[in-house]
Length: 59
Picture 1 (cartoon, one colour):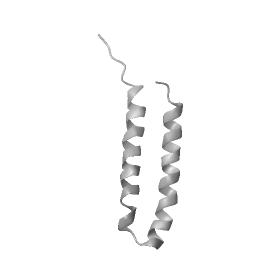
Picture 2 (cartoon, helix red, strand yellow):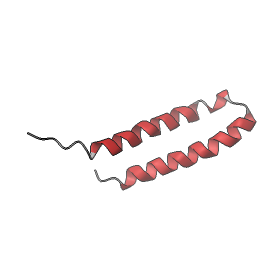
Picture 3 (tube, one colour):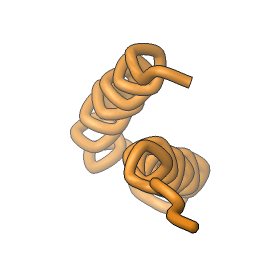
């Protein structure tokens, strides 16, 4: 018996990273406004990239 888990890992990895970005965004209030204005666009951009990558994966 052989299982092919290869297609599962990319999706899992993307979901884990998406969760990390979401947690980072939840913690933006811990930063002052000048730091937040630098960090937030990068996090939003990364989240959009991750969501697009998830959309393109075959289920």
